[in-house]
Length: 193
Image (cartoon, rainbow, N blue to C red; front, top):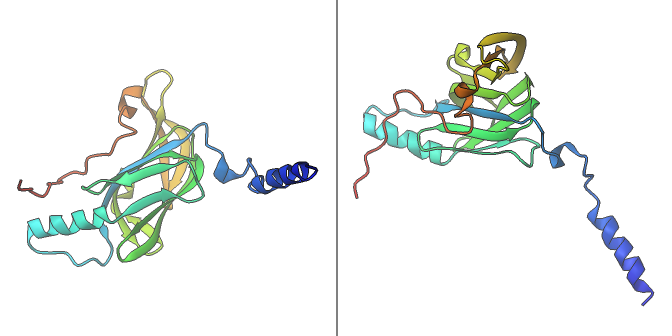
């Protein structure tokens, strides 16, 4: 009977090895949404027949995973058209990681992004160790405007090494911040039932 207090103490000590205040175990109170779409994988052999090319990309997108480095609470995915969404991303500094066939750990780094922002990163090319953005001027970092008027905040975020102005926009413009964006020109593969 005298062993119970010792066993209980040993159990409590063993369960408390991970500090509850570590960055990975806390959820941000002002998380980001990161959205966009994958254009392709660098070095992939493209097909000349449009339907075969669409099927090739759909297979690549189905094999792609996305996660946030050192964040237990972020979640996301890649849809069949290459669009991606990652929710509950920690603000200020985060690394979004893509893994797919032929590449490992293509990273998208975010720095100085204000809390509750929606980050839109269109036309991403996945490559070894990093992502390449086809049109860096199309990157958007948006937060809600308190008075409903669109304007620049004077702040800048760094998205994949590109300096992007933080814009205030009306709340209606951020209504889809938790949904997959629609890549332009996407044609689904025909399915026969």
